[in-house]
Length: 107
Length: 460
Image 1 (tube, helix red, strand yellow):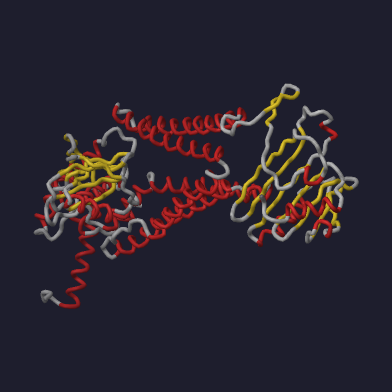
Image 2: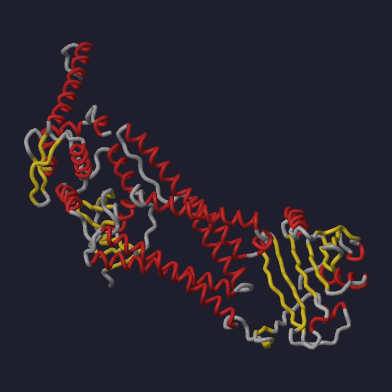
């Protein structure tokens, strides 16, 4: 079920996984995503908590250490695959856009 | 000036918008939610301020947890990191507030939020309503079964039975409305989530409010029309049982709270609480029934009545008012008759059983005339033929009613019981009354006319 669910990723899923290329805990992700996206994307704490739970269940991330209430995670091969698939999808979209509009910047 | 306030709040489980709006209004009035207990929501006084509230759900939590689990605390820490302060929790429901003007919401993915709410609802809210619905439907089915195989006229003539079935029907409608409300919201939320938004939740609908009002009106009218005038003993029993069940609820809530305080594990707390409810419900309801029956048998709940003893058994000397007596029909000189009347009525039907018989210790008691009759008053014309046919049919295989001349009885129809020969038992059909009457002698036409005069009118 989660596998099927993560065939495509939402922006929040994408950035959460992206943050986990290097080991970090949930609260780090809450700070990193707005910084990484120039505040364009923010993840709610509840949403992130659920996502981490589901990524763990789907084997897309793994827990690396627990320090009190801080649990750290790292991307797994399955997670990296999902990210790569999403990246390819976005690139395909970009390529399709360019095929229609050329290199011109959107207004 | 009190610094704490307790309020009974009646929000549906999934009314996150309504709860958040209500709590923001309370904070503006200077009251911040501090705790949710089984006995109400507790607020503490604060300086009135604008706060943003967020109601979210943590499906893995349970009402029986002694304290938030480590994972749940981690969730709270996540929320605190983005400025959300935990105000209170109630099982899966977690309520936070934020002092920032425009905080990042706790839930930013509507599809995940709908999924989380549904996972939480499946833990206790939905099973609770489905269980209640099942119990109510089973009770209704039992009533229908009794209507078909038992004394249905007696059932429809009993105010308590009729009010009980109305209350059960209301409960069925209430559960269905609540469950439909939830699933309607879920469907709407799923559609909206696919578009990236989450719709506002709805509080109690007008239908639910009307149903609750109807339940209260029903209860009050049962008290006024059945308990106070006619069935005080039964009413006292039912009222005592209801009180016991409320008491059980409070006691069980107390047990849960106590076990939480001593940090009993969730499974232990749940098992002990359910066992407490099960055992106490049976013990208290059984105990109440036993006490009421004992009190009725001993006459403690009945008005003081004269009694007499015959062959080691004590009998009550009833002297109820009867619309027709043996003395109205025969020249009898005996003042030791027992006159007994029972029954009840509802807006559909009334059924009263009257019996006049000599005391068993009277000299030549078996030779003295006695009279027994049942008056069924049909208030809903639709039921007249059903009642008549039922009374005609309800005899054993060996006995049956045969039509007889109704004119001496001044009735529309009259029947006489045949059991290997005619008995002095008749079924008389008047405009809205069906009278089944048994004489210990063969009545004369003059006596039949007296019966018609005395019984075909209003019941005295």
